[in-house]
Length: 143
Image (cartoon, rainbow, N blue to C red):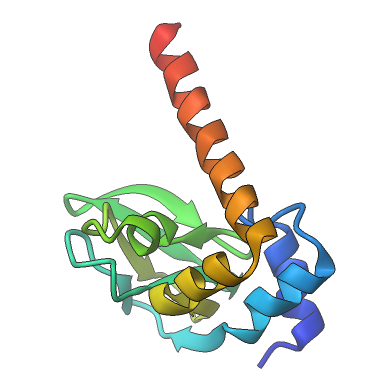
């Protein structure tokens, strides 16, 4: 089990939360739960409903990202996934499968939504991050 300090430090490295105040990070960390996965375990399955799911931050271990059953990326400590479906309720866009023992901190959609409503700093920051992502995609498409 990781300490609160470990979780807060991990959250600082998550683009969705990086730059938030320590108070906001503590609020987020207080709503997260630890989840452990053994090698081969599916953490998130592609095309499953996301609105009642969780987003995850990897604290230790490695996981692979699969789209249509094909590996497309590897995730490790500090990486996060699942936030898009948690925010908009759409189906998951990829499968995430543990390749080693993986320890994560998960944040449920209902807890994230409550935090967004309660703490304007979190809401504004998430909007800014998502807009930056959209602008980056648009820039790539226009190259």
